[in-house]
Amino acid sequence: MKGLTFTLRAEPEERLDLLALTPDRLDGMSVAEIARLRIGTSRKPASVGDLFKIAGKDASRIVFDGGSAHFDGIGAGMSSGMVYVAGDAGAQAGRKMRGGAIVIEGRCGTHAGSCMAGGRLEIRGNSGDCLGGPLAGEMLGMAGGVLVVRGRAGDYAGDRMRRGVIAILKGCGDYAGSRMIAGSVAVRGKVGAMPGYLMKRGSLLFDRRPEALSPTFIDCGRTDIAFSGLFDRYLIEDGILDKPLLGRRPGKYGGDTAVLGKGEILFRMGG
Amino acid sequence: MQELIRNGIGIDDTFAEAFGMRATAIIITGPTLKWARQAAITMTGYATSVIGCGCEAAIDVDLPPSQTPDGRPGCRVMLFAVSTDELQRQLKNRVGQCVLTSPGSACFAAMEGGTPLNLGAALRYFGDGWQISKKFGGRHYWRIPVMDGEFLCEATTGMTKEAVGGGNLLLLAANAEKALLAAERAVAAIGKIPGTIMPFPGGVVRSGSKIGAKYKGMTASTNEAFAPTLSGVVKSALGPDINAVLEIVIDGETSEAVSAAMRAGLKAVIDLGPKRGALRISAGNYGGKLGKFHYHLKDLLP
Image (cartoon, rainbow over the protein chains, first blue to last red):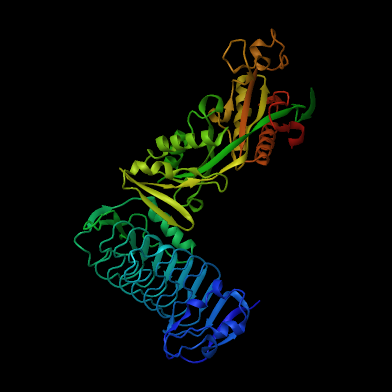
């Protein structure tokens, strides 16, 4: 059975809330019912049928043929199935997802993977700020699952994260892993200022020594630990990286000692 | 009883009697194979028989770096016990005292399914609050800071109730030297069978036992029927040409693994021939009433 395909007719003029178009929520609905769903957010909100040509039946595999920076909440809350976006996405892609997989071919707005608890979100382009992070007022960020950004991530990647893995392949902005509670954020490429700002626990894993570090991170020397080999192998076997990130003997900073101080920044060292 | 001859060696028409057991397995890695094996050997010391040691344990197989979770050399260790509780107790104590303490070691699950047995989940408290929990790739690990870096340990490992303990071969020879050579060949051959261990020293037992004794409180005592120095004065199982007997005891993850191991051991001893090795091969049993698993030698011959 062919996956349920939404082909974008024209660039939407309003922001869309695509919360309703997940495998879980569309399961068992007819094309006519789906076409009537309201997804616009303006005073005269558009319905699915206004904006998309709908084809296919299998709601466990949803394809957006064409994307837009106005597509908010793609795959939000989903727990199974697969969503593929052949284009860009807006804010909060995969927010609170618990299972299944989302692949976004293009760029993503802010709060991608916000508070996700399981499943896998892969963004092939760049992502905005607060990757995996909570919305204003929420206390906990990402709680599980795998979030891969093949491009660059903005500021505050992994904010308040407490479990799971974030992997960013082309560097990230400032305050990566800010206020982390636990979990792992791996970054290949240049990392902005103040990584690990106010992190309590958790791991930031870099392929180079971070440049602008808070003075509350303390040098813990060069480690000789089996974990780096185990994690490098995981990243390669999972298809996230093709070469080891950390190497056998990464350097370590401990922090953020401004708070609990049980977090770590492990980074690859030459030689 | 002696009916079959292979390469000049008599094969008794008898069977090995073995018992259902609980088993678990872990992978121990280290900076070098030497140190991974050292941790494994220390951990499996004093683990020859459940009668006195609580469990039976040994190295199953050495693993190259490409086959270990952390890409370092290692080995797979198996533990067998009579109950899940005892298996858990032995695993925790042995890993805690012998693997955690060994330089550069790390420890991973090497069995899936069954009741999860605590590994790092029990030892993490050694970290005194500095232990780090890591979950990725569907697995859970604990990292415990120690003096040479970190002890990396998976949280749990699996166990099986399908394991079999007590597969055996008795090698009867003209003298102790020949019995030992036959036993060494059998151990080398069985060592290549995955999922099996030989828990006794170097895989060999010289003190085969019978159940009970004339003394109260002794649950097992020497099997005088197989003691050559008594062959004239007791009802002996040995002929006049036999002056030494050694036994190989095999524990396996499955019954199939035990029969494969016995088959490999038989072939190795038969290939060695009667001039240099054993004159006769037999197997130990208790009349077939105690153990669920019977391995008839005639079914396992090459």
